[in-house]
Image 1 (tube, rainbow, N blue to C red):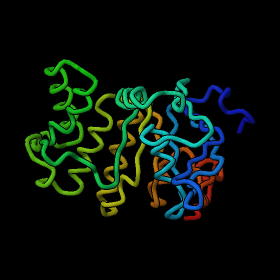
Image 2: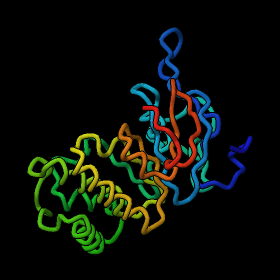
Image 3: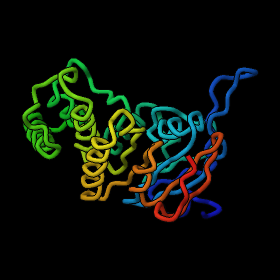
Image 4: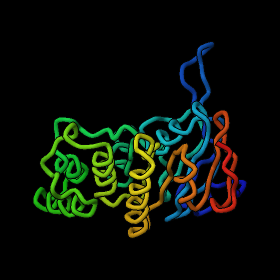
Amino acid sequence: MPSNPSKSGHFLVLNQVEKIYGSGESAQQVLRSVSFCVDKGERVALLGQSGSGKSTLLNVVSGIDTIASGEITIDGVRLHALSENERTLFRRRHIGFIYQSFNLIQTLTALENVTLPLQLNRLNPQLAETSARQMLQRVGLSDRANAFPDQLSGGEQQRIAIARAMIHKPALVLADEHTGNLDAETGGQMMALFNEIAHETNQTVLMVTHSQAVAKTADRIVQMVDGGVVEGGSSQSQSLAW
């Protein structure tokens, strides 16, 4: 770990990041001096007990939430220095987010959910639909294009969520317990699909998980304890504490 990670040349850099909710006596510090780096194309798993700050960390890296102090740099862009509108545009173009609860829009079909990121990025509508149909085929759900989320199984919804997060080929993919609502067999299938797509386009991945099986698929594990991080080494050699 370099003493000044902002000058390290890594793809994703967090330098002394702190996040505090509330103020005064009710203030709660959720992230404490978080510093670590992720290289381009690297897959990093975040492990930690509930309340250790893992999901909050994903939220600040995505720009959904702001930080109290510190620096977050993604591919040379100082995320914390952007305005709210600039962060939104940056997230739409460069970040994909997969949620444990799938977070699909219930009033949109599977095809429309997958097409949405391309529409928000103002891709030609015909090209957007063609790309979305190709992605649905890729995740094995071309025959479910017109189905609404409540007509899909949990595994099917997660496939749609993966397709939606990766359809615009984001440089950074954030996944928050993306196999947490699935059984072991379905979760394993999701991870294989997820890793295959991420590898093809050299996407950088930061994923929160409680699953040791999921963590072992990462290149490196970073443990979070009480809002701080304990830097991990290779996922093959590190003992999983959670």
